[in-house]
Every structure is written in C-alpha cells, then in structure tokens.
Length: 235
Length: 224
Image (cartoon, rainbow over all chains, first blue to last red):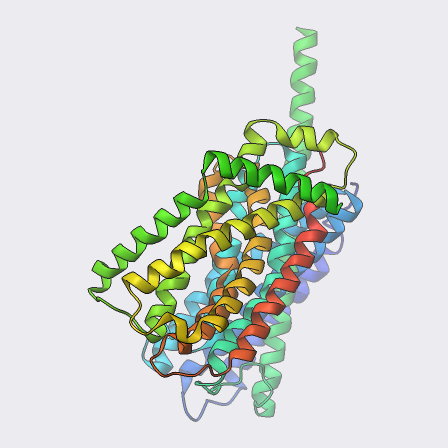
C-alpha cells in the first residue's frame, strides 16, 4: 500500500490538455484534406489513437495484474481494474467512431471484412464480462485475485485474437487501408502522432485521477467507520 | 503431479460414468440444436461453410454445458477443500479437470458428428474423415484448456451459469475461426483441403498458448 496516485497528476493533466488542444488545431488547420474521403477522414485522428490506447490499456491491465499476483499488493489490482475500466470506456468510443467512419466512407455502419474492426469487437465483448465477474465475487481478496487472473488471460488473448481474425481474412481481402500510419504523408503522420500522444496523456491523467478519487473515498469510508465506533463507545 | 492428476481424473470419469450428468446432456443438446437449425434455416441438407459453421457453433455451445458443470460438484460438496488440505501440487487439479473436459468433448463428438452427418450434412462424411478427426482433436485440446480455466474462474461467482458462456464464447472465437475454416473444404463435395496447414497451425498455437497461461495462473484461483 502507501502508493500516492496523485503524484504528478497536475503536470500530466496540463500536458494532456495542451497536446489535446494542439492535436485538434493540427487536425483542423494543418493536416491536408484526404483526396479520396474528404473531411470525414479526420475522424481517423480520434478513432485510431483511441483504439491503440484502449488495446494498450487492456494489455497494461494484464501486466499490472501480473504484478499484483506476484507481489500480493492489492493496489496493483486497483491499477489494473482502473486501466481496464477506462479502456472499456474508450472502446465504446472506438466502436461508435468506427461505425460513423465506416458509414461515411464505405456506406455501411458495420463491415465484417475489416479484420481490425471485428477483432476489436471480440476483445471488447470479452472485457465487458470483467464487470459481472469482478462484482459477483464478494470476498475482496478473492475478488482481486480472480480479476487479476482474468486480466492476464484476456491480455494474452488480445494479440492471439488479432492474429486469428487477420488469418481468416487475409487471403480473400487484401488490406484496403493501412491504419498504422506507415503509408501516411508527412503532415498527416505528424498530426496523427500528436493526437496519439494526446490520447495517451489523457488516458494516464484519467487513470491517475480515478485512482486518487478511489483512494480518497476508501480513506473517507475508513475514517467514517472509526468515527462511528468512537461515537458508539462514547455514547 | 501426474499421479495426483490421474487420480482426480479417474474420480471425475467414474462419477460421470455413474451419474451420466454432463455428456448425455451435451449430446442431447447438440441434436436439439440440429433440429433448430433445420427449421431455422429451412434446409434439409447443408454443405460447405454453412455445414461447417453449424457443426462448430453447435459443438461450442454444447461445450458450455460441460464447462458449467466442471467445478460445480467440487464447490458444492466440499471436494475442493479436501483437495487443498492434501499435500499435492495444485496444478494437478487443473490438469485433471482439463483432461476430464477433453474426454467429455471427445465422447460428445463421437455421438454429435455422426448425428450431424445423418441429419444435416449433404456430402459424404467419410471423404475427409482423417482430417476432420485431427481438427476436432486439436480444437478439443484448446477448448479443454480454456474451459477448465473459465470454469474455475466462474465457480466462485454468484452467477456461474451466466458468467461461463459470456466468458468462454469470446475466448474461443480464434478456435472457431481455425476449426470452421479448416473444416469447410472437407464438407464441400469434391473439395480438397486448402490452407489446412495454416489453420492447423493456428489451432496448435492457440492450444499451446492457452495451456501455458492456464498452467501459470491456475494456482492463484485456489489459494485460500
């Protein structure tokens, strides 16, 4: 225990705000319009960073869970829980922005032959079970252990799933769109990297904020109990 | 460890042999689902990707029944406490449960696959039987590993019957992709297996990774 989650929160939050603003400014005033898709393509600067950060958050949650099982320190379980929780929120955003983008550029809300989209949906569905699993175990110590086991298995599942779905599609459907930024022109790539950085910083800020608030409310609860005990003994 | 696992496995199989709780239910379930598919799709015989999809989805749904039951008796009747008191390696319990699930699945498929051939499959089953058996066995290994882990994870929750399918089915999507894609050419009249090696490699890789993960984390589900 004893970890102070609020350490460095202020500079990270400031950096997140600055890069997010800079990212938006670059998206609207600097990055060129896509010759093929036009203005709609700009959703790319939100959608792809969000997807990358969400997947990174899932895997990071698994790594924190390994730390928890190794050290037995329950604050690592809390870190893993908050990382997965935020990644699920981002994941909802990814699916919504992905659907909007697909509708605008391909004419359908959902496209099954885009392996990245399908893989993401499967991973998202799996992680949604984290909540019912975690909160239907009453004993707090066991809850932390079982959640960590889930986080590790699911974290390892992420890359396997992406490989498997890619394998199922690769032969019949060549990749239309490279989303990794590998084939982007320079200005687009720079904008994309700034947006990615902004999303990472935003994630870290929210993660720290949530952990701080969880820690604070836990302490408040403990103090309240102690106060009640004292009032009882006095009265 | 092997001896402990073998003892637990023998016990599980003997209980299953006497009570006939899991496997007959799973077999009955698959035949019922074939009937549902017959009316739902309004087709008398299936071939190609439709046949392979129906067979695999049915088998995976049937596996959910086996996975739900796998740890139920241990928790309800205190077998787990006794096991934890014994001075034996805890991983043995995982090995035994996964092996039991594997045996259940093989027993299920001995009934469910011929039943599928009789009820729904258009082309002759025997044309690609050796390949199909190989695919089934590889898929069963992965399903047994993931199933035993999921069953242990869900056994402590209040809503076990709810958590098992929600957890198991997304986890076995890669297995379904590999198995269904590998089976599809076998169920096509005159079709020869293409890309079989690639999908078998996918199934084998999945089996290996999840066996290792499950072996690594299973102990933490028992520490009490």
